[in-house]
Length: 216
Image (cartoon, rainbow, N blue to C red):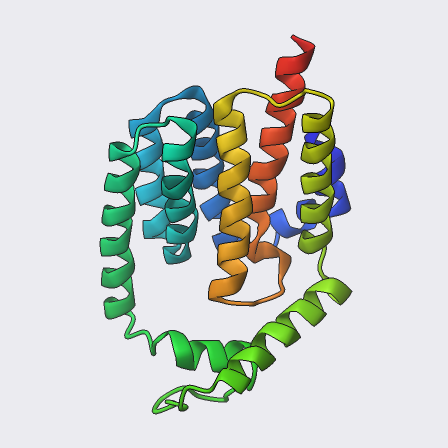
């Protein structure tokens, strides 16, 4: 079930060229599988490690925390991982003297800067809108993640329509990845596939688990 979708997204090429994102995925994907298995404290540990490797993993951690109560999952381990992840995010940002979300947003999505030292643009709704429009435009034209997300959402809807809903943890995994995918784009509308790989892979995993459970 999994390989054809990854081939469509050219993710095998990505594995050989995008080391930080794939390292993050190598930690986050086992966390997702363990989430389905009900190993909540192991999930918490891996999510904390993922945040230490790549701070924006906090989005995935927060998404899992948000869906947990709706699917009768233990909240305490996930809350612990979210709070610990926030600490890592803060420490890493301080250690590398991060310029802040808004300047980063502007030079990454609107106006490329040769250097960012002293770069502190005023907040502007029109500038923010420009960033989101540009991110969506480039994603639709040159990226695969947005089309794969539509395909996977459609596949889940068809499965549910035919009564192939999967267990609550498989559904929780899909809901968290769907929420995290949207949260990632909203927080930073970069169009590159590598930023959304872990969410697409999690949605694929959820679909595979649903199909596997149906066939058993």
